[in-house]
Image 1 (cartoon, helix red, strand yellow):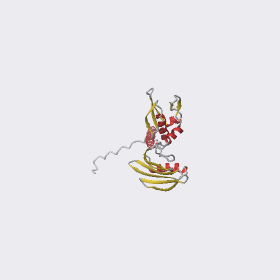
Image 2 (image 1 turned 90 degrees about the horizontal axis):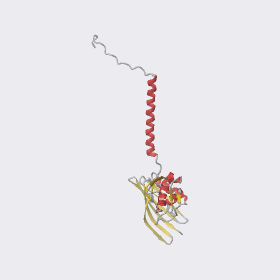
Image 3 (image 1 turned 60 degrees about the vertical axis):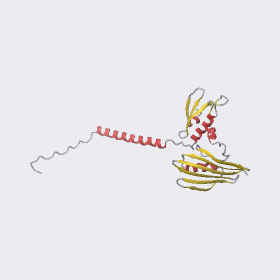
Image 4 (image 1 turned 90 degrees about the vertical axis):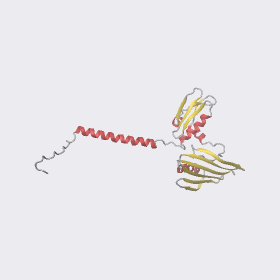
Length: 237
C-alpha cells in the first residue's frame, strides 16, 4: 500500500435501534410467529379435523336416515356424504332441498311427514339400527362392516344350516376393520381361534359353540381400499 494514498473509508456502523424500533421489531416477530402457528393449525385441521369415517356412528346415522327417508313417497334423497356425515333431502311437494348433518339429526332438527301425514323426527338410535339391518342373503347374526358397500357372493341353507360368502369394500385399513369385528363379535360370545395380519393382507376366525357358528374374515388392501370377504357357517342346532 502506498503511504501517500488516502486510506479507504471505514464502513459506517449503524446506531443501535431505539426503544420504539425494538417494540416494532418485537411486534413483527410475534405476528410472524402467530401466523406460522395459524398456518400449522389450519393444516392440522384439514388433515385431522374430520374424524368421521364410513364406520363411525355419524356415518351409520346418515346411512340409516337415508333408508328411512327413502321409504317415504314424499321425499327423495339427493345426496349423502358418509365421510362428512351429511345428507341432502328434497321435498317433492315443494321442490325444496335441505341439507342435514348427523348433529342435526341427533338434535331432532330433521323432521318429515311419515306415511300417516304426521310430522316426526328421525331418531338417531333407530337410524343406526336401520343402517346395520341385514339385506336378503345375509342371515341374522352376521355383522357387516358399517358403512361399507357389500355384495352377497353365495348363500345356501340346508336343514338348519346356513353357509355363505359376503364381500365388502371400505377405505379403512385392515387393522381398523379387524378391531371393529373383534369389538362386536367378542361381546356376542365369539372367541378368536386364529388371526394373521400382514402389511396388505390378513385373516381372522371367530367361533362360538352354542349355537355352533364360525365366521372367517379375509381382508386385502390394494390401491387405498380394503376388500373384506366374510365366510360363515351357522348351525341352528
